[in-house]
Length: 213
Length: 91
Figure 1 (cartoon, each protein chain N blue to C red):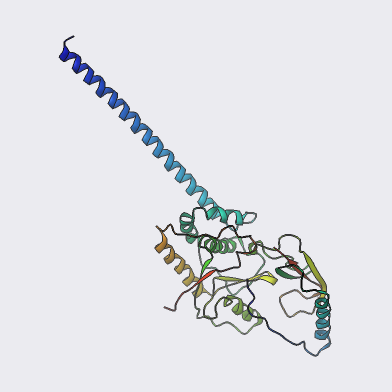
Figure 2: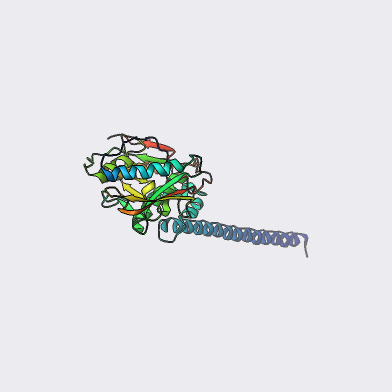
């Protein structure tokens, strides 16, 4: 074999090996990326499932909320999407509400948990009636602040829950959506740190008042 | 939930209100004021809610103490009857 031919063969071998190595590296990269995407999709699916079953009968909501708090930003997006206006707010909930009502209330509770106890409070144009029940509703919805109402409020010793009038419900849901819009890329979430289940659901740590627009 | 407003009231002069008041006073006198307990739940035995909703996060186990029975003459949220109990829970 002539030296020139030998050099050509060697060069060809080197190029061939380099191509094979590059192909293998590319293949591994694609596999790793697919695996990562798969994991992300699985996590999203699990998060979505945790959010969807909140408040449904028999579900361990407290455990799900704790799990959601591990990925607060991703959970916040899903939770905010679950908020909706509740019909017949003038009706007192005695004990548990319907699965739909419980789902919405738990979505608020989960948001409260992952934001370190934050909640919104909105003014209302609703004139509370003179009946005993309306008086109690007025009192508990204004419990945290006399100038605005929270989305829902409990009368602990009686197991009764009061729902805010429509205008306040809408304002509070819009406020959460705006809040998420500003915190979409935020990594600065401070969820509650393992509070006992009997302490946090009825405790608003940071009340954000929505001004009259 | 912190209780920031506590109101005092005198019972009405009628017999039922006075009886209820005295029953409550007797129960209060037996309390040392040093017993544990963070939450109260009022119920009429066998009628309506017997424990708070699960969502509250407390009151799903056995109460640490129960006072009663009292007679509830009605007019409020707890069902009327003569088997009214006040359950005390720590969590």
